Image 1 (tube, one colour):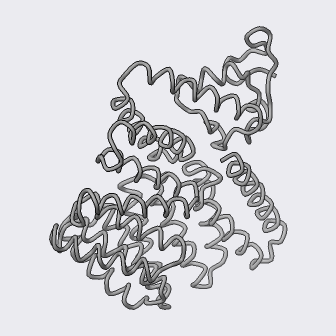
Image 2 (image 1 turned 90 degrees about the vertical axis):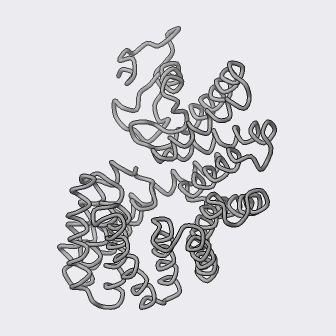
Length: 377
């Protein structure tokens, strides 16, 4: 068996091939640590395997972690602390966008120590880095850590920028979303109503950020069981978004998807299916099939098929979604796991016990890998 990077069996100084350092299997699992280290340094990818998208484990994880720290120190000597901090924040923002949250967290925690010392706790770039770190924690599923960071950031933003500053308003919205994540929907509604009032005052009722807050408020209302109120808000937002940004804008399409969900929850399954199908058609035109929003709409359409009493159509659509989510989002992403749980349930309902048990086994394997990552911090 050869190294997947250098394609030879012998590495530097005749080192042996390593296997089992991630979730890769077969020939893709064999690698020299020296090759992996060079690849990580070249591509700035230290924590996750580029093939299986899972975190490195065991000795390899420890070696790469130490080499990453050494690499960071090397970079710091080449520029001022302030410039290095800004560069690291930019790098972490890119990683967040690529959903490489583990690596983003590593970079931001280290960078914030430098940024706070160099620029101060309330510098705008430091506040931005704190927001990015909170987002990375949320992407990892560390909701309470994300919420704690958001609360600290909200206090600092109010103190240094004031309630009506765009950065403070963004932080308020993100903090409200964290309340949704923890199931505290009343706190989420209260915070979003305050954010909405301030955005209407500062930006105007038709501003895209104001409309985004209205749509987000509707989601929290659903969490409280106030689906009719949510439906009314979504209908208002949709009319304004079509006027302001057009039908094919991602925000408009997201509102249409949320409205379809409200129809389904209120028992109007036919309207839900029709609207979801229209959203899927438009999103596919705009983004293509392998896009995060498109996959969510496909999943919602499957749920609507299931609610309409068409389990086979629901299963077929969910299987399609799962295949794409594993490729686009990764096997451990929250949406991927949710799709797997839905499929297991649908399989049981359809008396496909073998398929259901196999899906449950796959879910357990992913959850074990997540626990390993959490244990490693």
